[in-house]
Length: 349
Image 1 (tube, rainbow, N blue to C red):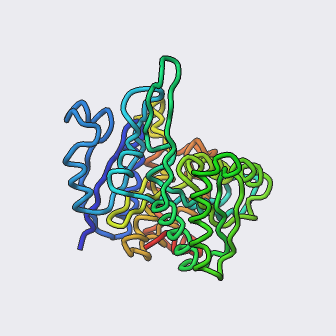
Image 2: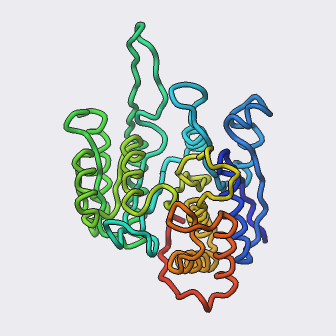
Image 3: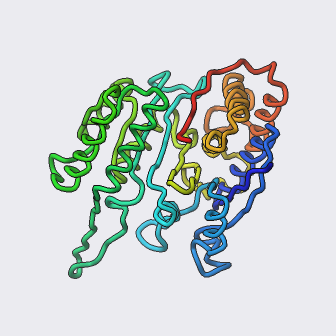
């Protein structure tokens, strides 16, 4: 039986990298029915809506989405499509695993971090107004409900996947009420999980600690803005945003996405690296219960990175997007050439 998936190819390099990821996932033998829709500026040209009604109805029907990058205007224009989708479908948990790929030179080998980010409120609530000319006010919304929900999500993941520590990241020394509430909720939930070590670090200190010694952390639990910033910092520990996956989970549905930009300057040139959206697809496969397929792709991806002859330019190779995908498909179809790797559960189910 085929899995029905809502596909948002995105813009810029989005269609190229999502097309490559789809080819690779289909090479495992898993059957999919893709319902493809535009979002953002492209959608507005066609439907006069940035998130068309047909796209919303598709996600409500399939409950699973795969999304490429969508350009967000800076300092004006329409709101972030990512933020709007998360709020519209109550995708309250942003999940970003941070792990090294073989033979990508980094300062720290064997990094294994999980970023758990509250996804629906905080400074990304989008409540802004001009008080008087030249004075703008942005409201930071923190609620007990959302803070408790993301805290329990993080601790439940830690328990199910035998993770050892959860650190709640905050700025409660300055924002005593809002971040203070987030901390109180984290502390309360932590008491239900005595086997998991609980800690608290101020966000600026956390950034320093991460670049000095990332191994001291396991799961980082944080509100929306901090999670956005720190997850990008952590991506830099393992090679950059072009290599790391992302997932957004709610009670009813999940959307898996590459977290890098749309890179319009290289769009259509067949040179973009599809690794981030492919690894997001791996999270999707595990969410769907297709663990064997996820293992095949993970093993093939690691083989291609170890071999290095078919890597894209951003990671030191000369292969194009399609050639990189072909190499992974070849490794899937000829598994004897790729050494086995250990695969974790990868994401909440």
